[in-house]
Amino acid sequence: MSHFPSEQLLTFSTVLSEGTLDAAARLLHITPSAVSQRLKALEQSAGRVLLQRSNPVQATEAGEVILRLARQVAQLEADAGRELGLSSDGARLAVPIVVNADSLAVWFLQALSRVPVDLNVTFDLHRDDEQHSTGLLRSGTVMAAVTATPDPVQGCRVESLGVMRYRAVAQPEFVKMWFPDFPHGLDAAALNTAPTVDFDRKDTYQWAFVESWSSSFAKSHVPERRGPRHYVPASQDFGDAIRLGLGWGLIPEVQCGPDIEAGRLIELAPDRPFDVPLYWQRWRTASNVLDVLSSTVREVSAEFLLQP
Image (cartoon, rainbow, N blue to C red):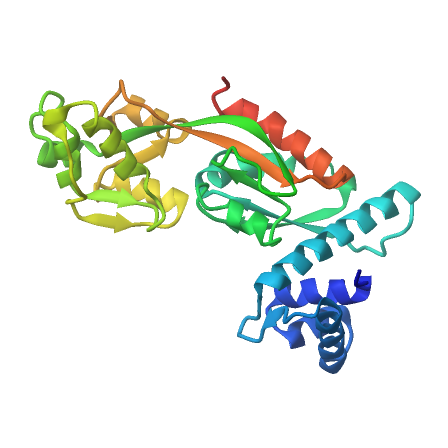
């Protein structure tokens, strides 16, 4: 079995984090030539090309395996150092996590704020749709994820966090213009014709809402998307686009509730909440850092998400 020295693994993960060999060299306080030599030695040990020399550099399929190993080794070394009371010289373990935008806006940052300071970590947050975030776990890019996928990624364990409830809403003037017979004339076909606000091109929630409604009534069958779509890829701005009347969309209940009560937004289908189960996936590797982080995430999510 090949042996991968920790300094080579550290160099490899640093290059991928920083994007270039020169940036990694500055962070590691070594020369770019030394970085290149360590990478070459690591690739020789692996017998595979591990890096695509693009800008920024990217891991190959084999490189993703090594990246996952490198981050697991760094995590285990940091945990061991803490248990032994060894000085870290101010170094902090970076914990990469992928989170969907709505969780980030509603509750996840509060969870991170409650992680004990003496854990001595920094957080490297990646934002991705909860339907796609497990890909970053598979590649070794992140150690943990908030995801809508209940099936554990290989090498990870999963637990339920709760349900994020969304409400279909629109601005009052928008409703008058596009749904003049509201609430009696509103159905899936009408929603499909009106302008819609999507987060990005991965966001299928508005369309899934229309499809779920149309499947309930044969007369409302919607064969394909028809209405214009706005793409607003930031949680606060997404909500603001709906509040300003660009289109209708789904906003987390905890965010749009006050606007509905104040009449700034109209709930289009009060009897049709859109529920998204969320899960926490993390590396199975024994780690005090991940244990403490997971406990905090579990505690805070219970305050904001619906529990079974």
